[in-house]
Amino acid sequence: MAGNDKRRGATRKPGTKKGMVVGSGGQRRRGLRGKGPTPKAQDRVPHPAKKRADAKAKAEQQRAKRKAQSETTPELIAGRNPVVECLRAGVPATGLYVAQGLDIDDRVKEAVRVAGDKGIAVVDVPRTEVDRMTGGALHQGVALQVPPYRYAHPEDVLQAARDSGLPPLVVALDGVTDPRNLGAVIRSAAAFGAHGVVVPQRRSAGMSAVAWRSSAGAAAKLPVARAVNLTRTLKDFQAEGLMVVGLDADSDITSDELELATGPLVVVVGSEGRGLSRLVRDTCDQTVSVPMIGEVESLNASVAAGIVLSEVARRRRQR
Image 1 (cartoon, rainbow, N blue to C red):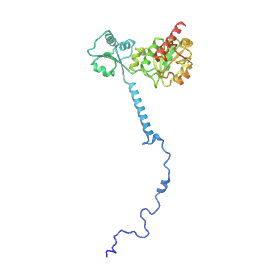
Image 2 (image 1 turned 135 degrees about the horizontal axis):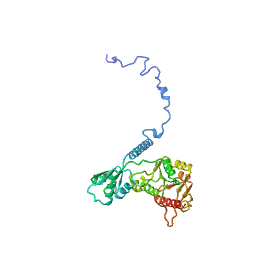
Image 3 (image 1 turned 180 degrees about the vertical axis):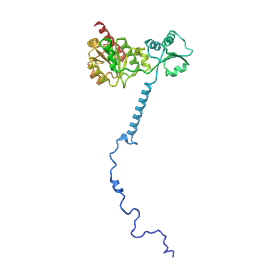
């Protein structure tokens, strides 16, 4: 009959259960087990701190890549006067580029002649190519290619001073980031008898084409050293008997009163905005300011360095 009809498999036998019947397979025990310490915010993939950490790491990699490229890529010095001055100074150039159809004057003639005498290749290129190579800088139709700058070691600068037989005079830059200031300081250092310039490895301008141009070729005559840690390098100089004098606009002692000028000396120039860093200022044996009559808040770093170095040279001449 239909009422007594039962579908096969529609019922379970008495005493049976649905699902597992023996134990839990350890699932309950594993569920009670902890998952370990909570990861730091920067280690959690969806967390904003993780994204910021990744972005910072990527930016550091890009900066390192650009720095490595800059240290292996030739620089171009643009402009007739800078090119001629660099060639006169013996800058180790590898090529002179002259724009086609250029209105040639005495400076261009001298540049081509000196380059030829030194075995430097002279290449005629379209003016648009010179524009591209110099990044749109004011090149006046000529550009000089120089290899990446080879920095000296701070000890090399000190050794050069010892070999000169004169009291060592070294210029150190603390956070000067403008390459034009770097080049101008190198030019003043060479003019007033310094034996070398020391720059920090980080947060400092390097010997770029702009610095070459501002130095007017002086960087080819004066060694520029790179210090991994400027404070430690200054202490090393002190251990060798040099006195460290920092330029500080707030100092009560002026460069006119610099009695240390005639002895072994390091002149430290601070950055364009904040001056000397705290650690460097604390390391200095003395700080001096530039005497000024007018109500001017401060001087450009390279101008202040030139004034102090001129006073040092004057005192050494009168010694």
